[in-house]
Length: 162
Image 1 (spheres, rainbow, N blue to C red):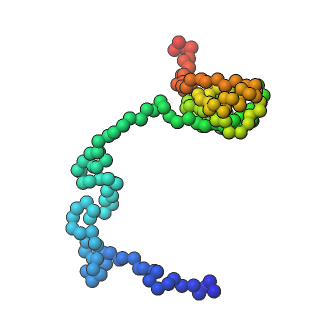
Image 2 (image 1 turned 90 degrees about the vertical axis):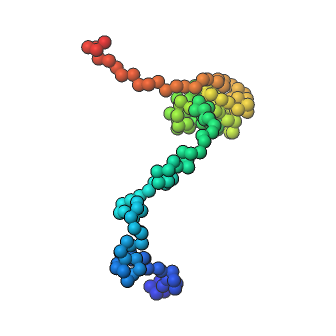
Image 3 (image 1 turned 45 degrees about the vertical axis):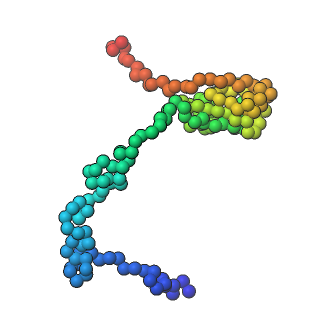
């Protein structure tokens, strides 16, 4: 019966009651010792803090270089391009509008999984060999374009300022 279930012996442990007098064994300083940062209430020490000594992650030498301009490609398969109308231009802006990529200012590569079957003009930063062959065999064109840079928003000036 579910109403008669009990936890097995030793499964439930009473919490340690600190600061309840000298007879408890944890009275007085409540198990925190005397003085120092950890004895104070509200004292929290960050991960990696070494008491003012230069932390390990800052002592270690820094190695390597990450080229931010060489980000990985956003991948789109040919089967995903079947949703576009015949003869339409498929560029990063159109792919973003269709929800196939997240950002237009990052590189896009078209891969050859699936079939498109429509003549499309596909503009992207990269194509696999198979994708290029399939696009061109269906009567479309595969055009390699450069990286699209986001333009900063222009603040329009009023007639008085101009």
